[in-house]
Length: 353
Image (cartoon, rainbow, N blue to C red; front, side, top):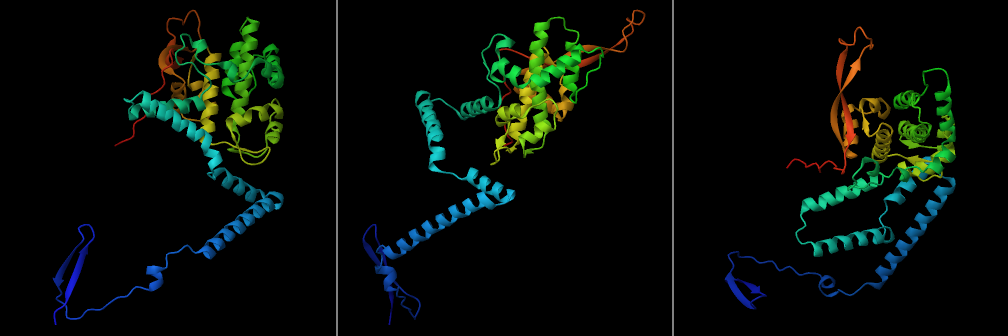
């Protein structure tokens, strides 16, 4: 007996028969419930919905118990899960507006390239980490809005202890200034010789804010208590730190605890470098901030370049300056980071292909 195998082609609706070489054929029958039972199982859907509802109730109850009786570690883990959860309400407004802007840009400018999109994204990230700036400014004084960092009223109200301590050091007969930060000591020593009282008071208010930023930079990555941080410093008040710590750190769930990431650390360092430029007439030696920022000299230069500075060299005298040795005194080359306008930020770094 000869057996044939039929091959039905659905596209052409043709059936082709081929002889079978095997002498035995086994017939496989599929279960009838798999082939014919394709109706919606209402009972299983109801059971799944009931399970999901009960599970959400259990999760909500667990969260409430954790908030009331849980340990700090359990509460921190709960807040971390909540921050990382993606919801419709959390992403709809900002994401939809961003998508709409990108679509409008794509329709108006059809020649937009990948490099242009990357440059726009880089500029948006700079606006998040840098103070308010004007990229087309014609003078260095107008390049950055210093009042957006700290106004004069806030300085007089919250930094009064720091200002009084600085004024006391300047009015004292001793020429040595005591401060735990190198840049603050050098700036106070320079301001001691300033005769213009108005300029000196303006510089002291900005130096007081630098002092606060350096204190935030040197604290632990996780700030468990802002009030306790203020207690460890004799000049800073808790009201000042609570007002400005949210700008340079992220809340970790508690009312008084914050977490400082690498992004926030760079943001603090960039604000310090900008205020140092303002205090030093927009040209700063990066060596003066290396010890306070606790980073290599190469990283300090990167901070200033991100602000729009360029590197220049200048000569500095070494040794005692006397009339008889004035001709033989040594001169040393020193590097200065100078702010230039209009602002030119570093180009986007390209990865290796």
